[in-house]
Every structure is written in structure tokens, then in C-alpha cells.
Length: 155
Image (cartoon, rainbow, N blue to C red; front, top):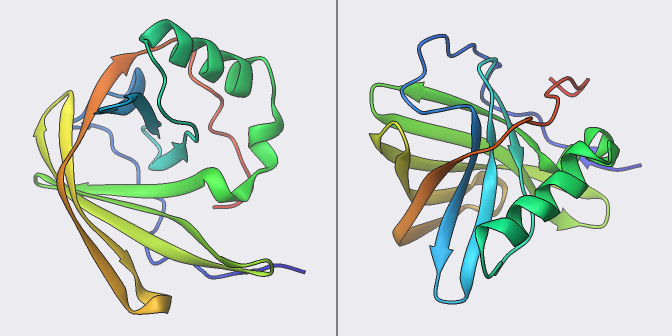
């Protein structure tokens, strides 16, 4: 049995979201593109795992296969999270792997720059009493349809 720590954020609808929601967010690294995740109007976030894609087409194909063609993601609690936006502050709560049988919550915090870009400044892992600071951790929007279904039973 795996222990899942409760989230501190509550599922909150973002009717007039200051960020675009019709696609996914990604970051640019020296090695390529790293997908980040999908945001939904209902306050749900789906983390995309994978890194160092050489181009958008490769990244889109992997996302298409993992999230649209396959529904396995729907039962993977580790990729689901919640987010809130207040003024220009974005908070994203996801799970952090502690051990084979424990998952704690972690919180990313950042600032929205415009409707297609935000920057993550901190990752807080309260269980470990750890805060990591990031420099230049920008997330950029990429339009993508269809988005994966955000229906799940975790929140």
C-alpha cells in the first residue's frame, strides 16, 4: 500500500485564466525541449514526463502517443496535480517520490509574465524541509489539440 500525502491546494476553477490553456507548456534546455504539463480550467494540472526532445514534432508525437492514443495516464496518480493563480503568482502542487511506498506533495511557485510564459522560481518539498531555487526556469506555451481528458478520481 502506498501512502499519499494530502495536497494543500484545493481544486479551484480558473474561469478567466491569465495563461493560455489550449495546449501544453514546455521549457527550452541546451539539449532540446522538455515538456512540462497541461493546465485545465478546472484547476487540474497534468505533468508531462520526458526530456530533451530535438524538435516540436518529436515532442508532439510522444505526447500524442502517451496521452491521446493511450489512456494509461488516467490511473497514474504521480502525474496529476492542482494549480492556483492569484494575481501574477502561479502555484502548482504535484507529488514527489520519497520511497517505494511514500509520496509527499511538492509545490512549484512562480510568476506569470504573459499569457504564454511564466517562470518557476521555487520548488518546496515540506516533508523534506527543502526549498530549491531556480534561475531562468521559463515555461512557454505550445498550442496542442486535442488535450488529454482531465477527468480523474484523485481530487
